[in-house]
Amino acid sequence: MSLNKLVICGVGLIGGSLARALKATRTVKEVVGVGRSEASLARACELGVIDRAAVSMADAVAGADVVVLAAPVAQTPALLAAIRPHLGGNTIVTDAGSTKTDAVAAAREALGDEVWRFVPGHPIAGAELSGVDAAKVDLYRDRRVVLCPQPGNRREDVAQVRAMWEAAGARVSEMSETQHDRVFASVSHLPHVLSYALIAQILEAPDAALKFGFAGGGFRDFTRIAASNPEMWRDICMANREALLAELDGYLATLGTLRDLIDTGDGAGLEAVFARTSRARTDWAKQQEK
Amino acid sequence: MSLNKLVICGVGLIGGSLARALKATRTVKEVVGVGRSEASLARACELGVIDRAAVSMADAVAGADVVVLAAPVAQTPALLAAIRPHLGGNTIVTDAGSTKTDAVAAAREALGDEVWRFVPGHPIAGAELSGVDAAKVDLYRDRRVVLCPQPGNRREDVAQVRAMWEAAGARVSEMSETQHDRVFASVSHLPHVLSYALIAQILEAPDAALKFGFAGGGFRDFTRIAASNPEMWRDICMANREALLAELDGYLATLGTLRDLIDTGDGAGLEAVFARTSRARTDWAKQQEK
Image (cartoon, rainbow over all chains, first blue to last red; front, side, top):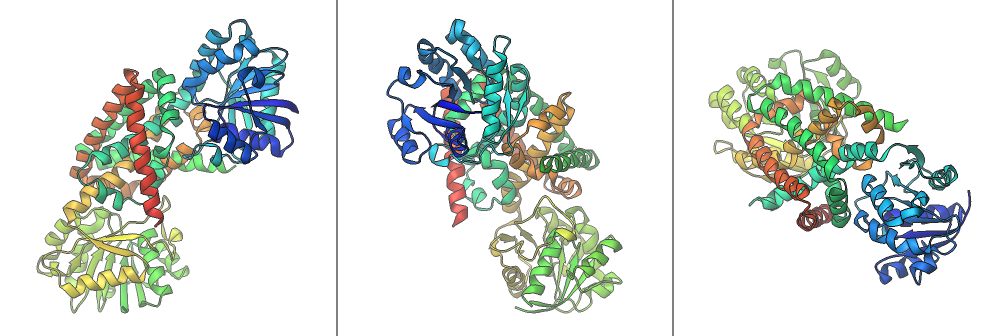
């Protein structure tokens, strides 16, 4: 696996970490950055995350092996539209967004007869930090990446994107975009909303300062993701609205059941649920260690 | 600060860690354990967490400086009733439970005219692990402990309990039991219920295995507390039912607001909430580092 020219659109934690990993393993010769902020691109150059900032989208895409979209997902349609006129040769376009149904729809709309080049992807890694300064060479080491290959994709292009992520240390799986969005609405998008909601509730309380003052380790872990980038998570919630609402409504039903057990003083019923979930969470953690 | 005889009722993570810290700092000469399980007490002796298991409650309490209740909180009334006949001299009784209104009520009921001896306390420390094997000498280092002194307490007894926790490395505050229970319903008990509920929801899903398989770092942190001890958390939810339900209903209202923003596609409104909460969580983390 070797790339001559890699383009990163949105050089933050996600795109920057990919660039760092591929440069460290000498998988790529040149990394070119595209972004909204000149200061941030200059910083990416200074840190050695990219080799140079593109002077235009034409300059960026010309002769690129792979273009990776790593900006907040609401920018995907505009980025694809800006890239489209410059596509040629064997350039592959992929993305690193947390939602995939919207990315597939945007690619169909924006790329037209070039849509065969677009291989949707999602690295399962992140942090509550964002921005290029947070980019880490090992962010993807032993982490999972999901690809959602499309019927129109060339087999070798999917293999190329897979090899790129594997070079960054990730384990790559494939699933449909619908399945992807349902799974991540449940295990990622919903927890973010729930975590944001707890902080929002405390901020509304008259004794917020006292509450924050006595919050301990459980609170710290539960709310770590509530420090996540607001724009990124706004975009994810909007892009995956349908699946997220379905999971949120399922959650409200489950929480309502727990509320009833507490309200009626059904300690045995509550303990049964806690015991089942505690065991499942413990088993999950053991699986993760493997 | 020096204790001749300390009694720990419930030698698990919480009681065992206190014993370890006080022994390590030579604050206590003898630690006597009381518990439901002989095997667990034998293990505590073997680990050096306690010096010996009590042969009876009379044996345990006789001549004790301090008796600490560190069992799941539903056992508080029965433990206090069992201790009562043997109280004498200057023996102080305190507890380490996560709920305080119920402990105060239980003490009034069970201790009668000995209730002046009971100084309610709550160390803000824990882990998803439980049991004496998880006990750590530094569990309370720089952690907070809340005492809820009662009108009938002797000032020197409150000072003694405070000094004991300080010897274990903790920073001690005081508040009323009502205030305590409201604060911890919000920042501890509710997050536990919310975390348990997410796992419960996933377990009900037909694609649970797939979801667990792709759960990442955000999920790991959000659900760490869902691995907590089921009996302990059943007891806490039952003991602090009223304050917990009030916080839970407040949370449902806040979550309902977020749901509406998602449902109506109000990205700007959603981003405003996320930005406010993200900032508050980041500020909180900075405060914690101090």
